[in-house]
Length: 115
Length: 115
Image (cartoon, rainbow over all chains, first blue to last red; front, top):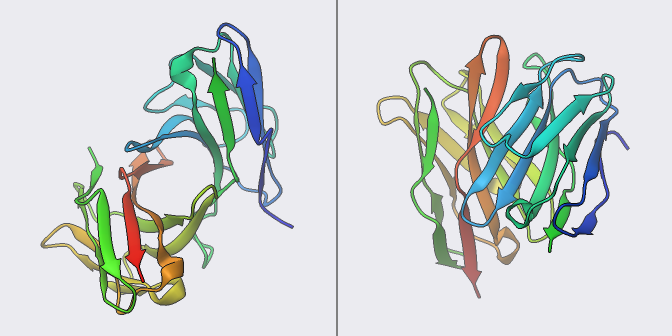
């Protein structure tokens, strides 16, 4: 089924460990996004990629890096995890405005706990 | 600059009664606006969108929203709540910056439906 696939779904890290969250979409979308969701804060943008080969910082980029490997894949890396990065992470891609169902398609999320 | 404010963090209704979830935005131009729903431990699903066509927008599951430019509002309504409507709802405004489109989320409104 077409959509946005995130892996892993759950992860527990120790402080200082590194890991990469994977995101892939098979809808040929140009724009992709990484958000974190925390209680009472809504979703906050970490990084986004308007097109293959470009990435830009969002509202809360500190402690993260991203790679737009190709048009399909947009990964998020934590180089040295901190407890403050405990959150649920969502990847999204954007349908072009010309499409009747214009909007953003979200993955099912990665629940990350840093201890 | 653009921002979106959801005026209530929690809304509690009885099954069969109307639902009103309030959203105000600030924008220097006519924005694109969305409502998304998130059921517990699930991803985000698009409910409806406003993209400068009809000001009254109908979405899925009986929800609708009215864009009021004079009030800078995009409130979500439903005539009769169902138990399955209990979820978190997010109002989203799309920021246009240098040709990129950046979704900015409100902090969310938790809808509680009592039997």
